[in-house]
Length: 425
Image (cartoon, rainbow, N blue to C red; front, side):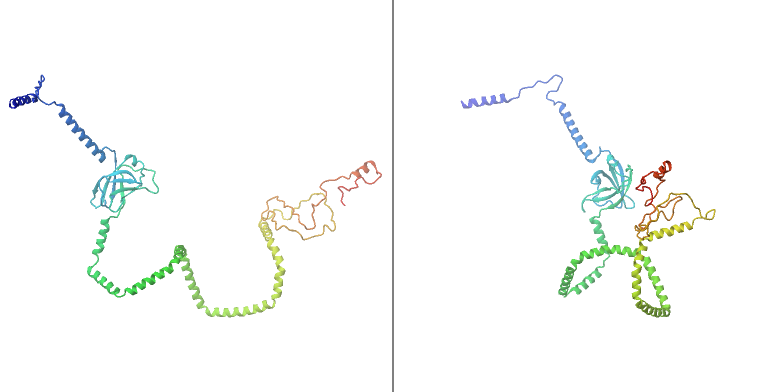
């Protein structure tokens, strides 16, 4: 039974695994793929290429609007590449577009500036090529001026590079130039001479350094004073420099005076001898009269003190006399006198009107030295024993009792004005 069933099962397996037939559509080829798949693939490739191109353009700044500037420098320096940054006060305001070497060896950098940032940059701004480190990439730095101009930088302006950061290759080039000037034979001889000079003298050199260190230790506390003196030395030197011409003139004239003294030394000796004799005579005169001179000076002290106090008044009085002396003469010679009737003053009374010298108060110029026309000097009241304005008749007073007797005859009894009001006495 097993052998009879084997072929049948295999037939059934082959029959069941066969694919079902597919009928072709009308107007189409049986089994052909559609055109949509290739189109979709083409569109996908184009989109990817567009994204790549857009990213590259954005990265390179092809879609960013810029305005050109030019920078002329002695050299561009190492690691200065296109697309380097242009900074001002640490803010990126543009990029380096192209670097060109001029026939004279200088470098010309084209700067692509941001238009909005360029409107804020003064026209007198300077530029330099700088780097953050010695080995770092270079960038263009715009240096803001201390006094910015009102005008702003315009497109197409050519800037002059003021400075390029020192680089390692420059240092090595300068070192190489120095080493080229050194003769190896002479250098060997110099080093040999130094070796011979220092050979076997290490202990002495060490002792010298020790002594020098001790001396510096003693000088160290005085360094502050030395620094202060050094600081003041500049001002003193400037003062002497300003007065140098006068000092030279003094020395020149002192030389002339010295020559004159040497030429007239005999006359000078005679003069000194005569002065010695005069001094001896004066010493005898002053020595013998010393008490009298001392007494005289003591007596003159109050007078001189009073003259010192009233010196301004004496000065203005003399100035007033000088002013009066310089005035033109009158048309009619003589003196002008104004005569008028005045009210009577009180009579002399003893002892209140005795003269005294007790006035105080210092000097009073009273308008001197130039007294204007019609000016009337004020009366200065002093304690001098006389005062015409102490009291007196200030107006016309009528004797009322006498008027009554004139009108009505004698009246019995004492006078009605017993207090003597308005009457002298």
